[in-house]
Amino acid sequence: MPSPVFVIDPREGTVSGPGGEVRLEPKVMQVLMVLARYSGHVVSRAELLDTVWSGAVVTEHTLSRCIYQLREQLRSIASRSGGQDYDPIETLPKRGYRLLATIEGTPAEMRISGNRLLIELRRPTVLTIGLGLFVVFVILFFAGLS
Image 1 (cartoon, one colour):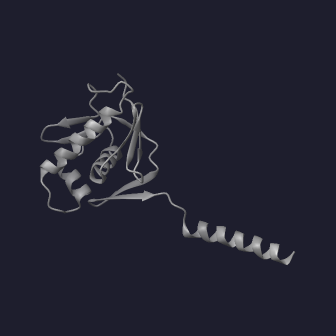
Image 2 (spheres, rainbow, N blue to C red):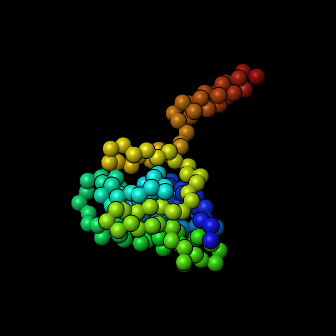
Image 3 (cartoon, rainbow, N blue to C red):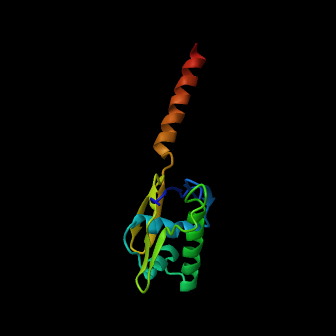
């Protein structure tokens, strides 16, 4: 089976695939975002823990639970008939994880800075909003002169 295409929407916390859409817990979404950032490459458990939990004290069980949930959620939307034999994440013992799923269309710019995951959601800037208000003001001003 060819790899299904998944679309991540971090703002909404959702992932869409051929079989539907699921909502992920925030930390599960962050794990997916890091794996997607390095898609096709191995990401160590230590790197995931440092990036997603930013120095908070958590056990490796916490990461294992997130990976398990992510696998189950992606499998559930991998195809219309359910992709229970599809494994979107490869586990490399003693090394880490590799995302095998195809991810595209993320509406956020992701950067890794040190050990922190930075997700910049595209939102209207202050300049765009200010310009819009100015145009409305000018239209109202000239409408009042008529």
